[in-house]
Image 1: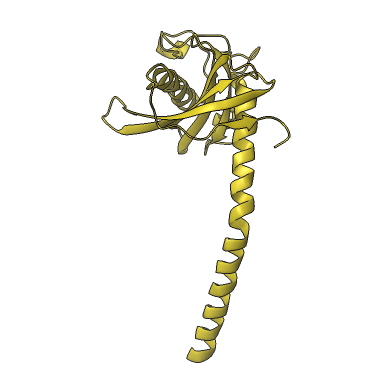
Image 2: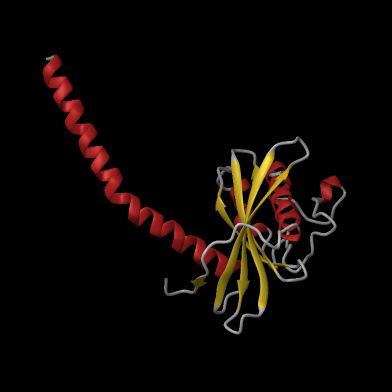
Length: 199
């Protein structure tokens, strides 16, 4: 019995390792495509390029180091369009990762949720709630004066019954703005890559 169980375990482990290895490439490609599509969406669409990728590290109010990835974008004529910034904070159910697009002046062009573990039907509404024309619309706003929910004295309507998620989302956006404004001139740069709908 021991030999049979050991043999089954070895064969199963081998199959799982093979499947894991075989799916690594397609999963990585899918993540890269989702990011490229996200960058295009939060920057307002059109043909654009990621001209430079910067990594900015800042400490939050509790001293925890947070990492932001900033995708500096340009159009075909190499005109600066601003940047898409990845920002992560802790939400109600876990980490909330947001990609926010800023124009060169720091105004919000758009956003998308990259990852979240918020309650379906409540906190998960953040993907739509703060979009243009919705109740918590932040598009076109500039977070130089931090975006805050009305419950805390601000001007942004929180998601109904999801104030914690709303606070976390706005914190991610505010932090993304600070990281964008703190982008070093000679940051860690990646290869230039085109972002379009055909990738």
